[in-house]
Amino acid sequence: MIRNRFLIPVLFLVLFHCKKKESDSDKDIYEWKTINVTASAYNSLAYQTDSNPSIAAFGDTLTPGMKCIAVSRDLLELGLEHNTPVKIEGLDSLYLVKDKMNKRWKKHIDVYMGTDVKAARKWGKKKVAITYGVLIEK
Image (cartoon, rainbow, N blue to C red; front, side):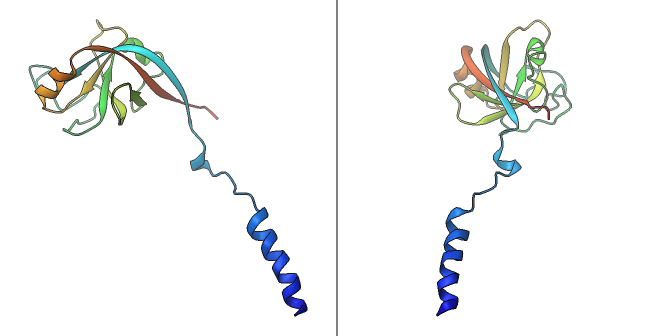
C-alpha cells in the first residue's frame, strides 16, 4: 500500500510534466522568401529544349510526373539554386529547382509538365507569387 502511494505521484510527474524535446526534424531548415515572377510551362520535347530534352541544365534526368521547375538565371543569385524547394501560387505541390533557363529571361520560372503539351498550354503564361526555401546556415 505504501508503495502505491509513492508510485502514483511519480507516474503523474513522469507522464504529465515531461516536455517533449524538439528534434532536428521539427525545426525548419529553411528561411522562406516570397517574390513575384512570370510563370510559363515547358515539356521535355526536343523542339522546346534541345536534342536531349530529358536532361536538365544541372544534369538531372527529368521524367513525366516530376514536380520541378526551371528558373531564370537572375533568380539563382536570389537563392533559387539547384534543388531549392518552391511553392507556386495556384499549384498544390512543392516543386524543386532542377533546370535553368536561357540568359535572356528575367524573373521567370518554367513549370515542368512532362510531355503533356495540352497541360502546358492550359497553364499558359501568368504572374504568380512563389515562396522558396533558402537553407539556413548554422
